[in-house]
Amino acid sequence: MTLKFYKYQGTGNDFIIIDNRTGFFSKNNTKLVNFLCDRKFGIGADGLMLVEKPEVKDDDFKMVYYNADGNESSMCGNGGRCLVAFAKHLGIIKDKAKFTAIDGSHKAIIHNGLVSLQMQDVKSIRREGEDLFLDTGSPHHVVFTEEVDTIDVRTQGAGIRYNQQYKEKGTNVNFVKQLSANEYKVRTYERGVEDETLSCGTGVTAVAIAASASNRADGELVKLQTPGGELSVSFRRNGETFKEIWLTGPATQVFKGEILCKL
Image (cartoon, rainbow, N blue to C red; front, side, top):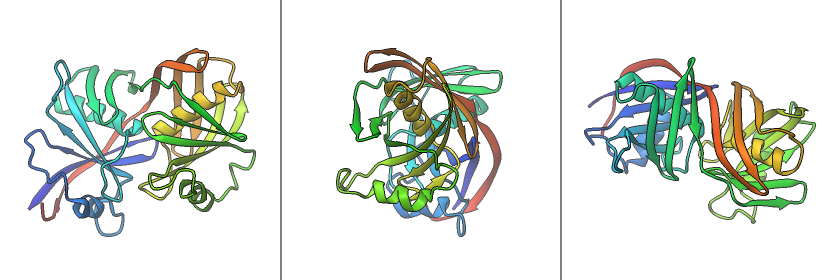
């Protein structure tokens, strides 16, 4: 069968997106998703997303996200922003969106070519020595280090991702260097991809909140430099609780095409 797809990227975090409002796509076919995301034999991407008909009243659509390994995963911030841009391309929305993902309800705004996505509130942050762990829709371990430019992200990230404290589920890992009070350089190891990606939306969100929680950042707007480009995260802090968290950055359609595969 010929499968029509779109390719989007948000600061280098790239995704295959499929319009599945008719429900034709085989959602339990792990091998198919893995094949499509394979950079040698398939299309190539950090993940695959489906836009589906909404199941919640007043939603514009539903988001379904898979890691490159083919397994349905937790929330993807850059993926969510790209899906909003795709929904506008399809004519589902104009400049505002409301949708449900695996972690719950999200709102989004498109303004001046940037997509802002409201993330889930963060009410729990765990200290691991000098590191921090929190969940921003996906679990993230945050390491502040001056060696962010030279660190072996794949090796050291995997070491943390697979250690005993995170057991079977694992975690994403962010290595962070502070550039100024409210600006940070971030490199991320993503579970499911099992390697460094050029950017991670839930990752930079975790970094911004971790920077504030550890009293490194002195404001409620943080800029994040990733290998794929710049993102920003704004929030409202009340003690250890963070609300009104917005992830903002570009989301661009790269190309569209067709691929022969077995659905």
